[in-house]
Image 1: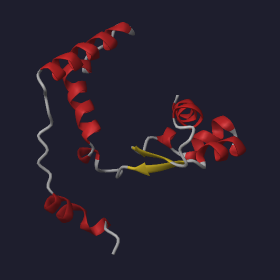
Image 2: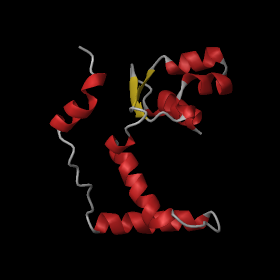
Image 3: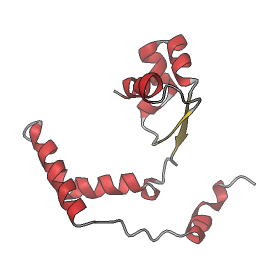
Image 4: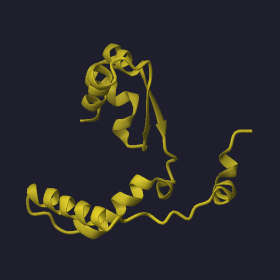
Amino acid sequence: DFVQFIGHLVKKAYVSARKIHLVLDNLNTHFRSSFEEILGVKEATQMLERVEFHYTPKHASWLNMAEIEIGIMDRQCTGCRIPNEQTPRSEVAAWTDRRNQAKSTIDWKFTRQDADQKLSRHYVS
């Protein structure tokens, strides 16, 4: 659960951090309202005062290396019917081992100039 994970970051993993910065996609559980729904406004406010969320663009998952890697994994190993809970665990573990042994990388071809051309209308002047 995302709220529980953030609670762990705030209360245990980064207790002494003044601010915790997280880069997230726009999944519905990644917003303040999810915290308020689960914890109540007061507790959510206390937890989130030390957390700052930075969101990836809504229509730019192709810019997100993690999204690209998850897409590759999905096509190569989880794109079938899953008969039980253990199957995806073992499939993903085997896929990860193969990918690491092959030293697979993502051939990133998006340049700064490409970004300027595609995204300049979103820049703040």
